Length: 588
Image: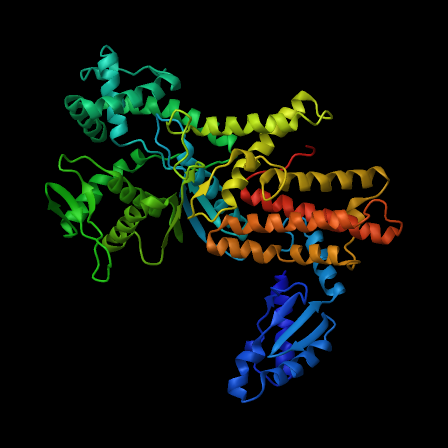
């Protein structure tokens, strides 16, 4: 099913051609003056010079052709050469009816069929998720859903940080605290215990303690670095500890991601790249790409056209240990080997952009990733407090993500509990749904690269451009449809009819842009495009709701038309918020 805008433009181009002009100039745009018209075409201005004619005269001739077309009404040529017009009610209602009939896709044809591999999430194991992990999770999840809806085959990978110094710090700290553990006995050849020697709470205490100690105790830092190297080289007891750390951490990480309604196809870590590192390093040496610099092994990636310094990509540290660069490069080897994607997309903090410039250039230079495979970086800004700085706890520490969700649920619970029609169990369920919508919509309505201020009061408000407002609109529509059914009406038998007022025509015009919105969001990697559309639909519907007698309409055919429009609006809003990664309750 063609996008509505394309259908309009096709008809306008026919008018240009019929009037004797080049149809390529028949471009159409949504009017920036909706009080004057719904759409506009300015091709007459662009053609005037080549035709050596007054642009207004050209516009008059094209407008005359448009007036013959039943798809348009209120066509007018306006000086110096604009063509303004509205869409005929029947042309619009026919299109929306087809959207309504297409329950699964609402008129959106699949327009892309690529194999996309997405890297988002990126938490370090043995550490709790904090507010810095929020945006990667919610933006990545939304982009994944949009890409799948567009028709792509998408594989998502959380890419856990499990092979760096944090592992060595935990091992070194654990060795000091509990040297009797069998994992530290190099002569042990038996089976290691199935149960981890720590809980997630203990693990989350061990890491920060070890990290703090390493900054004050140089000997301990050296022990941690040595433990990291030995773990990377395959020391049996340390690898067994790594497995235990992963088992305990991943269980906790999955629990927190589930609260956010975020999921991954793969739970791979940096350590999964380890089997590929030795051959990769040797190949880079053999082919002359890698060389020593101050004891480290590096690949030069600077280019003559660079306007700023691009440092070499470091492959191995001077002690032979692997780094983020190493594991990211080796990870791309198995991703290409196992999945052969058309594109690899990283959704990562914008401050990591230089790192990915180095990685992308290195894999191109060394042939790890062929030119036909697109490499993309979607960098996001930070979540800030009202002071404009990165969001912290009251004590000044990094805000844990689960505490942030708890704060929103607590604030939302007070508002949801005001509805005495909800049982305590239903109120609790609704609270969780609305809280996640408040958090995710509050993030996703912003352009990914921009920082934003987390404002608990604004995010949880039921008024304005917020998640709760969007959900309240959907719940309002569901209530109307339920009441119509209770009156004996059949929602599924109601069809879209021609607009009866400006309010329902405005709503219909907004709904017709759903397909174009999805495409725009996909092509620009911008969930905020869908978020803006969701708010626009909600505003248009609520205006229509307040201006229209829907359930009390005495004309039965008009009522059915209103009900069908409500039904389509609900479907469009629910599909849109699903693409953003949250859902709506039945009641609030």
